[in-house]
Image (cartoon, rainbow, N blue to C red; front, top):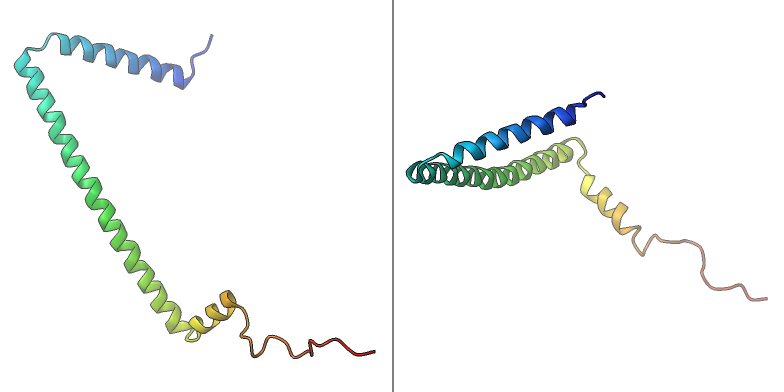
Length: 105
């Protein structure tokens, strides 16, 4: 019977969890509290870093959008008019030159 990478990973993860549980049960209360405080501190640092990364990503993509708009306007000056025409459709004045009244018979 062959072992896949998933099986090996599961065995290694189980062994690490068992060793961690064994080590935790043999710690003193002071060591447990110290480890708990260290984990909490690392979590709070990671949380603060993730929140600041979210803010910096918003700023980065905002700046990128502004730069792209500037470059597009620089190389294609009538871009706003073309986009308005594309999304709004043709204006009412030039919609149709065909007479819309039915022909009399």
